Image (cartoon, rainbow, N blue to C red; front, side, top):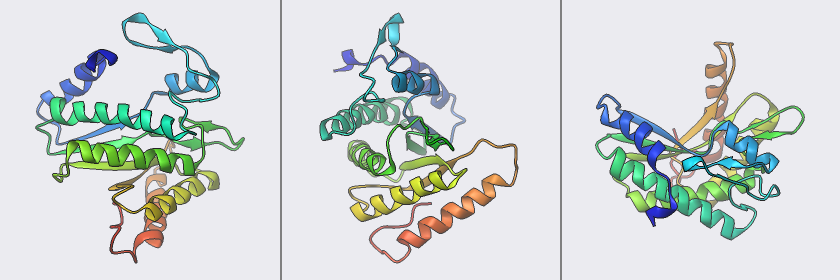
Amino acid sequence: DDGNYVWEGVDYNVGGACAAGSVELMDFRVGDTYQVTNALNKGEAVPMGGGNATTFPASWMFPTDVLTENGIALWAAVATRLATRVREKLCASQPKVVFDILTEIYIDSEDEAHFWPHNASVYARLYAAAAASIKAAVGDDGGVSLAGPNVLLSNSKNEDFFTTFIEACHAMGYAACPLDVATFHYFSPDSTKPTSMATWLQSAVWHESHADAGFAPPR
């Protein structure tokens, strides 16, 4: 029921970008901004459309309780509805659309997680549910790719997160966990970081999946 959604912001920003006609690749984040995730982590009110706000249980630290199967299913269903609108209504003419399932996952030196409040195993289950559902809803015409986990590879904790996710996704198989693009995120004035992080990521992905003909290594 579209009455349960507020599409104005997505339609205006994403629809406007695709309607401009100069976008050959749309990389769309299925997730929340820092302001929203910060409010969720603290159990504070989250701004909604029309000047409204909603408070979610602080113990969830997320819009649904993803430590339960029902919470994962609910989030995946909303993510699929959003992705379907982007692909089929707003960006139908784009040759390539990438859906990034959450982004900027980061665990700092104090073990505080940002953007994603749980461990890599829980993320893998959520990613698999959402990505497989989106893939089934929008079809597999070669124009849609699913990406994750977009973790900030700045320390060993984040590298462990990435490795655990890749291992879990590979164990589930591509049909259950369709990962087309393995992604990372970085904030650094050091111009060597993108290359060094990409090299590390490529090695981690190749080590996990290169010998499995049934799970093509993601790019």
